[in-house]
Length: 117
Length: 117
Image (tube, rainbow over all chains, first blue to last red; front, side, top):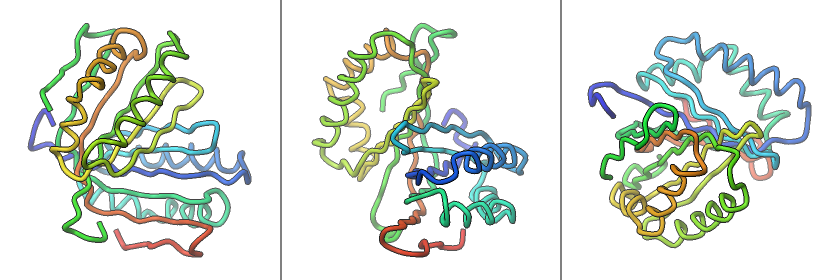
């Protein structure tokens, strides 16, 4: 991490969708992204889902406490339960502390910050 | 993590594709997944890409050293360079140590291992 004092917690959520209720699922997913972004310690979110129904969402938090508070947010808990009942065949969640980061952006730099390791 | 002695390093690779060379890209991606799986310390890989071209791949490793060795694998380095030249508009890589994990699987259990926090 560029500033080693700057904690970044990644919550990696990998899931397989059922084919149930795509409209309700999409609405809930959008609502959760919007709600997460308003929580204390929120740093960002990245999400992708393939046509085969496998998706990965990674949310980033300034502390473990912030990540736990979001997991336990009342509206989020209700959506998690609905997810298990209807939307997901399976999911895996991993919580991880970021130790290194590097990026490449064609528009802004010709070469990446290619830190060894 | 279920066994706290069991290190798991997650390498989170988020990227935006150019629209260049989809066939070459798909072949290289498949080859890299196959090659990664044969490296020492490889634990697994998860990947999703949305129709808008944003993708997330997370690979899991038994140690930091294993993750670094894969990053520096000669064939992988060549593909990384080709990725910057042709396939990616941008990417972000984060290396993170997994501290907690829980899962849900409709087929095997009715309720998740819903560890508080």
